[in-house]
Length: 418
Image 1 (spheres, helix red, strand yellow):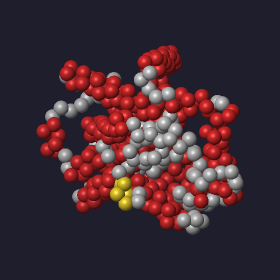
Image 2 (cartoon, rainbow, N blue to C red):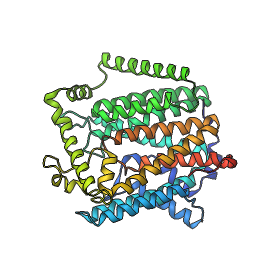
Image 3 (spheres, rainbow, N blue to C red):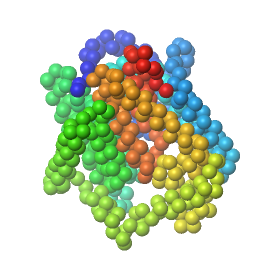
Image 4 (cartoon, rainbow, N blue to C red):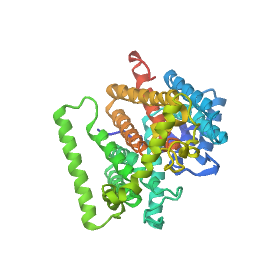
């Protein structure tokens, strides 16, 4: 499959509105977490400006009702749980961030991304911003005491490796999109994708993030071998080809010594009794504390971003952190109804993208499935290291909604998203 790219830059620029320029331009900084004040980022400011423009022009497109209902239930559960928070201000800060995501970021992107070209451009800029940060980490080689590399916007080395889970499918999609270009541009695109692929693999190895490696593998499996409607025989061939490709790349990089060995050492230590308690024991105590807290109060949680203050009340050996699992974190902080609401929102999103995939043109199918695979990789990481508030993850949700909505608009007789 190939994606058709428009090649009339002057005409395209003439049609771009200020809201489109803000949304498209902001994509490059979305993954960089450039903080201005507390949790306010540069990306938030640009999206808020686009929101004001769209409100002024009365052009803002509302989210489908199913998403709005899930968002309201989640925010209500989070607000009620905030009354039990040890630090209510921190709970309210995260509630405001989720409200911004649901009622500003998602509608703005849904409104602005109306063409395949715009969607591809936004995703290419997200990849460019992410890879620029990884390249800076590669050049600077700034590490923590254990030798794990750091990215400039975080002191947590895992954050360097997380983007690999969405870069892998998106880079493949963008490379396939370049096949409609001239031979010279196609060659340049291939070269850039190969270099980007190396940086992606390097980020996993240098960060030594096991969850990133697992998330990337999950994203590749979904992207290559889990598309709807593919015959079983062809699916098996795809799985075997993927396994052979991963093994060949990993073997080549290992033999040539092109990658740090930190990830390999951490994986081996995970299965060694003397190191296992230090690597996973802490997370086990956090999970145990979360389960005890949830059983004691299943309907109202401790408030967003607040469980870390009360972990030792439920497990004396737990450290003051959030559970290293998105769903445990949600259950203990916003209760069962808030957790189910967010899960329902994501399930409806996957349902809508699969429905759109089945009726979309080949070019849109490639785009939709890259987003599905990227989110599967991200959600795999969330099973071990929750980062749900990062705006670029929700940008993928919004992009998927926008592409699916356009497909449903082209096929009005089959119903609409949500």
